[in-house]
Length: 151
Image 1 (cartoon, rainbow, N blue to C red):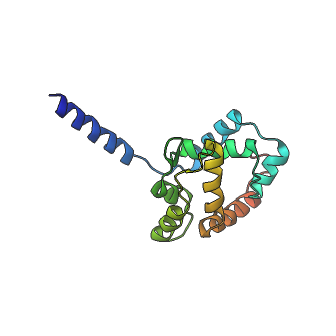
Image 2: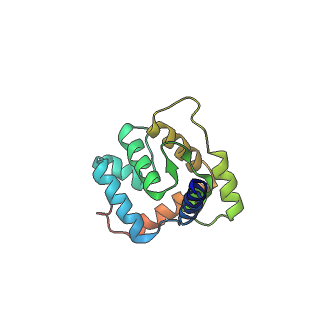
Image 3: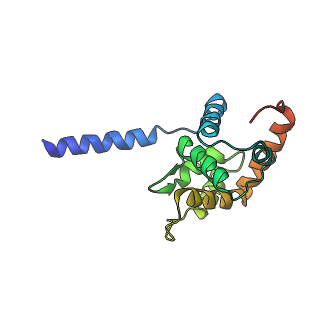
């Protein structure tokens, strides 16, 4: 009987993991606002982020880690999930190419860095890739479109 319970729980966990979907629109805005509340940023830092400048500073690292965790693409125990990262941050590349880039940015944190440093390292890798180029182009277009008070 216990064996069946364990199998059932395992199948439920797998099914739950597969329920993940990329976050969009208002869900992204809520995540961003939640992370800004949890990790306040100066107006200068917010301006840098609007221009897709990501300084390696504790407040920025913690904010980006919060975003990645709430998106469901990063866990403090396992790091980035390449498949989810590729789906969440891909803004136009072929899926296989985005997944290959994401897989190349995954590390096991063998140096035992703090969580925010580990997450930031992966973020920097992604932002230095074609995925990062599409994110930068998207952000530039959005910043031209949105009122200045946003973020």
